Image (tube, rainbow, N blue to C red; front, side):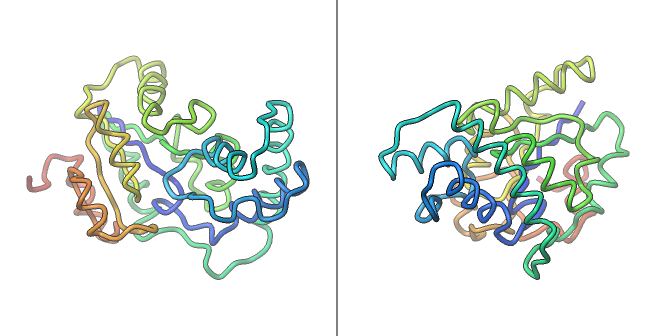
Length: 231
């Protein structure tokens, strides 16, 4: 059994800043601070880590109840922002074709490994028509630390499909150094794609198992999982 875990932002899609704008709006409405995300690293982070960094930057006290209010407001604002056209919003090269072809491979299961809260991930991917390809995943709801997400995805895959995948049959596909790094502690295969904020050279320095400029050559990408890709 193979388990393929895809990052969302910068890997599957580019929301054109939709997520950041929605989060900024919700933060101002709940906490009264405009542009809370300014100066905060977003790429490769989990949503709870982003919130933690904002609170540290603003020297604010963490409030679980307020955070839950913020999340619900964020989901509303995110849905609303997707109704406003943005020219920079797009699906990344190779999708959805790659997902369509992967979804019919035997003993191959598609999941998500993303820092987005699950509901946010669903809203984003539904708007691009991609949510339907993913039966399970690991999300920002599971842990603040991205490096701890892989076991959550593996556990859910095992529960769904009745088999526990060997570590080298778990693939993490993402566009940031953190995607590569989070695969390492768990023996997963790291596939880096330079469609986000990080260049090929930066990603190469992390020594992923496979590295692509983008996934426009879908057949080459698929050979990794059909054992036809050169070492």
